Image (spheres, rainbow, N blue to C red):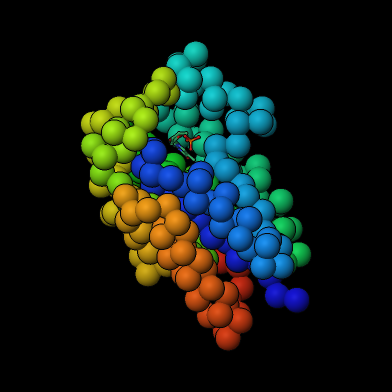
Length: 208
Ligand code: 2DT
């Protein structure tokens, strides 16, 4: 049996990543494909609890310090990520290093500096970018209490995401009907499985 695929959802807040990633896992499982959902930040670990304190504005941290904690929160999951992929489980991941870079670079940290701690992480096979303009996102539920849920920040973040896209990314219009988005994502995912079956690619490393 071949390895699982690493499928990543990225996007601004309120773009529907959580809904669509959950639906994708369920659809894959229903089709008999082993798949699991992972979410970053993982707020359950010791590092994740520090991140949660920062995001919910209970604690303050330097921009550099919080950036490195987000990265550490991914590194601490890498053994599990590798083991799952190698055992044939497909991982559907809600946010990853691109969020790490986009949010910190939006705060004016140098983009090369931002990428450095995540170099060598396991790279996603496919990235689905759920694209929504922050003005449309704000209409959905309004932004909540977390530190980054502000219009100006989200606009900058979106620009940074666009600057990192390559051929592994697909832009999905997040304003479309959720069922239609799910169908599009299923189609893209089926193509990814087909390509991988025809020419299996080894697990790759990010930004190397
Ligand atoms: P959620 O709302 O999806 O829980 O995200 N973030 C996320 C960063 O600034 N750096 C990162 O590396 C990651 C993964 C995006 C919580 C917020 O944390 C931001 C929104």
